[in-house]
Image (cartoon, rainbow, N blue to C red; front, side):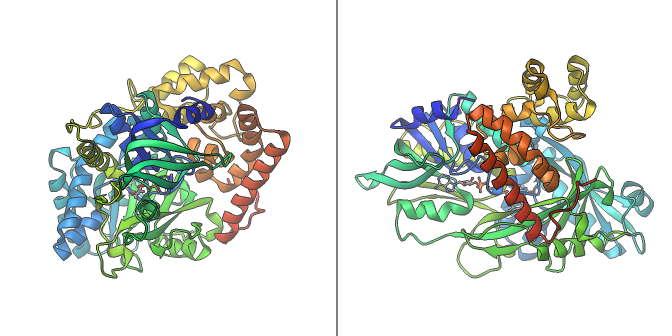
Length: 551
Ligand SMILES: Cc1cc2nc3c(=O)[nH]c(=O)nc-3n(C[C@H](O)[C@H](O)[C@H](O)COP(=O)(O)OP(=O)(O)OC[C@H]3O[C@@H](n4cnc5c(N)ncnc54)[C@H](O)[C@@H]3O)c2cc1C
């Protein structure tokens, strides 16, 4: 990608056909779709790309088994629409980002034959809705087969499980790959650029006031259409366009924890069908850890999103009912929390009852096009609808969306064994090869070239772990400007282990600082700030910050 300074020079005072506000999954997909349809597009993100909800998901590409249950129980067409649309998008998301996603089998352990019958019928319906986009049909697994695949599962009273297929993906990686695809197709994108207001001509939006969050410099972006894809912050931007507009968003905090994989050593994921508060909970193998979540609690737009001790205990209580050996809080290695952007249709329903459907709003006063709600799985379809609306508002013909069959950069030539060619051609360890293939696909050799030019950059970031220092340089090229941008969304080490990511901070700070021209003092402060932040995550989650490295 171009350097941030270069990009800012292009944006400053520039004139565009579409300005997309918000660089999460929805905004990145909207920007890509618009640019590929030939519209000159700019994407502005107030923090880092994927810095908000889009890197805090359960990382499942799914129609939503629970939403299907609700659609049937409540005869709710909105829930049915979400499931149907997501099941059909699922296959496109898997196909377009093969190195960032995979199919995954989910087991629902059953302790009563009646439950087995209930889930079996429900999942047959799930298969039927997916139709010819199905991955493979759901089926019953005997008690013996269930325990063979999940050896640490509680076996007292287990009658078997229902297995069904969905997808799994690297959400932050997918989001950044969408932004890269947008830039490679000629678009202009910058992170840390916040829209703070609008300027109007004849009552409709003509320009956005933006503030660079790093230099505090202010400037103006002129555009013919503005897309508000700010997820949980949609009401704030709607309010900037039309002060006093009634709010639509309700935010529901969801927290996840990560545990060592040997807690549930399995290739498959587990779905816990009913938690204490009547929802589902997932335990999913992800990047060498077991990802478990989520909780659901309504929050405000300004609330801090950290995983609390109470949430850790809630999640462990649900999980432990399914395990022979209970997991203790001290085994938690990391966690994260995000806010689901849900659209309210009036009434005071609990957030867990609000539909995950999306809604497109064209404000007749300002012309602002807001795309609200939805799911990661439906990001592409939401973008397609949004850019159809943009073309209509610009008075140009609506052209077909080019994103249905458009593999992301790094997908061409990728196979599940691609990593072996990295071992063979570059002499790196299997772990590093698998890690790089999973993050960069077939563009991994360009990261290895960085390492081959400087032996220091071929070293691991943390001794004994797969990520290498060259990825920090690549992170800077992919617009990372903080230590957290690198460790969380470019490399993923922060999700693997809070303690390892604290250990990695000095190396990341020093290499990133060199790339970005930081002073020694700036580097020292950036490292201290990051370590303090992780230290706080540990404390709020009820974990001892000073414990030694994770196993
Ligand atoms: C706990 C949890 C689990 C989930 N699990 C799944 C799952 O497994 N599968 C699935 O399909 N979906 C899942 N989802 C839903 C999915 O994550 C969200 O629907 C999706 O990430 C929303 O993306 P977004 O781009 O709309 O919002 P965001 O990712 O929040 O992006 C909005 C962006 O707008 C930026 N912004 C805000 N104000 C401004 C401004 N003034 N100027 C510029 N930029 C601004 C923000 O910084 C932010 O980055 C989950 C959600 C949560 C919370």
